Length: 293
Image 1 (cartoon, rainbow, N blue to C red):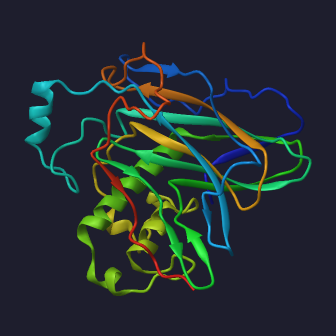
Image 2 (cartoon, rainbow, N blue to C red; image 1 turned 180 degrees about the horizontal axis):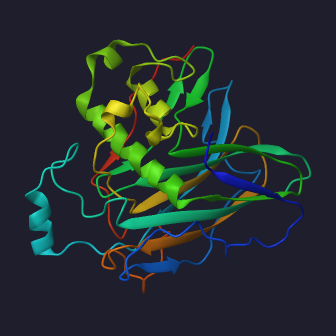
């Protein structure tokens, strides 16, 4: 089952953000920072993200960049001396160095209920994951986000929850796995046909890796081989909302970051939310298009 924790809050009571995950076992150098809330909203007058006359998708996103301290010249030189698959060098940030947790509140400002997808797409120093849209004759299906949580929010209701430190470690692992799959491009996956349920092909493998109930600790036979022993840590993410009908909805998140070695995050700097980045990923990564009905 998914390890993502959710709770229901009726009305508009404040979000409780003081409850943290169990101790991370951090060293005495570890620094923890809780940042100012980050809002994102969608209004009923927004232009559709996608509309082909049959399927209409409404979607908004906002970049969230963690104030990572970049390696200096000597440190970067050392990283280049160590090749760590699937990358051409060792990562500066691993998932054991920087721990991230995201507490969220999603609000439906309309009287009618909505099915809302909460989206979170990871960035590491190597890659920024950008989900594509698979278009078929009968169906149009977006690729799964790193975290893609569908929740029903009734009229004038709020829901709260947390993408835990473990959840965010998992999404970093899924992105590293995705890069390994794309590097290997296994013939058996390339020749398979991806279906509407992401059942095959490279597209299917990547969506399977990101599927919210699939965990890298499950010894999954489809993608377990591609999980690298070293996982690059998160340097940011794209926060998003998606619906298939018009509406007025909003999400607010509180981001907590633990810098385990104490020299990877500038705790005196804020999150960047304007599209600029403290550490820019080397490339955008998108799953190859899959075939749908």
